[in-house]
Image (cartoon, rainbow, N blue to C red; front, side):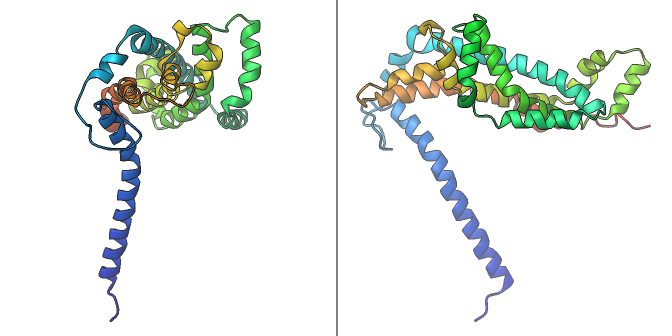
Length: 279
């Protein structure tokens, strides 16, 4: 008996749903392990219900040396790097979006190439340069490198969002005597709020999870961020305190989740251009 088109469509839909469920399970299992292990006094590698619910793992890691100081260092590094990245990306994307030049395309292709360079390939010359200019083992030096490493892709994102803001709005502001910088700050950036939010979240998340850069550029233990201090939970002989590692992972993930929640409305609101260029 021949299968009807509707039955074939149902079969394909069920197969797609099953595939999506498998992918979702692959992502959810590690998260489930983290949550269950953080409450398990005898946590291991297996995903299982806790033998007994306890907060001892959180109490063990909630100390200045293990959690509070590294998290503060992470907030300083990633917050400063994100602010610098967003500001520089906006200033660089504005002329690329608003003014036509024969150098625009070569410049964009150059920064696109810069996004493909692996961090490990440039860390040796960067380390030598930082030693020469006395920026090694400094928070400001690490912030500068964080911003520089995220800036190429941030410029690409910012320019694409900026292209969606009509230039007629700026021309009206210029007629009233506004400078290009004033039109950027008071017209373009407020209207492309979702774009700024995307660049902010992307830059912060990429910096927050970066282990290699602060591990190489920072030498003082008191300056290490949480991305590096998490390595302390892994012993020299393969011994790992899984419960404390899971508890620390939950705490470590909290700032990123809070940042996303704070900007989620801006991400979904779209560009506020309703009727701005009518009439």
